[in-house]
Length: 412
Image (cartoon, rainbow, N blue to C red; front, side, top):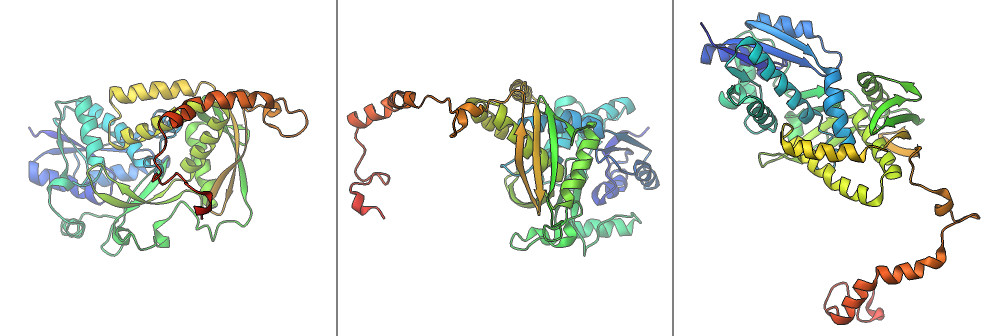
């Protein structure tokens, strides 16, 4: 009796070729697992294709709601942006798929799981570490990491074995998408000097072709989680879908990033993330209203670490649990509404309100009715600057210090 392998199957080039390759190389029965986190994927079509290519069984899972609720929105609450730019769309999907790979392997009695990652990408780390953390007994095969074929050779292999694939040598983009974003790489994009051609984008209008009038959208949050658009309660998936459409129409969400991969190389990555960019901007605007100065300062540090953790494939760790607990605590009063202006590729918060707002008009205003005690400021400043003024008297600054101007006439 043959052993079984559960293959994370997208229907793209590498995983389509992998079905035949796993059978030919290891004599394994291949069970494919396709997880829909796009909200509108033709799962039946993908299942039929896998079976035609020789899969013993083709399993499909609709996991869009799970993805948004348990992976995307926790990262949104954390303000997670890798290197301050990337909303982690692909990275957030990998721990979910790894979890389902392990579950299906156990149910089907498979000794192996497989994925279509190459040997120099980040996803191989995310899948391997996730699977090994959840079930150390499972063996992992990564065909695209092991077969030694270039992308052109993989396409040739597919043609030789009558495997239909969407990629061609003339259009060799590698694309991964889900509800939180779309990533595009390979082909002409590997030249960081070259502007991405128009055919790279499918979710966003060019800012030049976007509407000439701005759109305004009001996003309401409850404890850091978006729950309403323009006064309408929406389930998580529908809320993200609507924002992807609206923000994408106005050219919001295009990202062109030179990214530091976990494996040590730099990579040019193109992303489209209209809803992610809009919601992250709105969430940060609401936090500026409801969190204290120290909370915001520390949370920025946590956000950076949280993003690195997700990017590096460490979702199933105690470190993630600890950071998530801190993030959840910060979100207790992050409730309220933010009005976002979408225009020609820009997304700007132009209004925010909350029942837990720390903004006090009577203290902030410069008009009549100002209740701030100006007479208290000199004493506060004296105490605040006491340490630095004392140190400067005892330990004078070096005259050659670049920030020390000896003579005001020397200032240029």
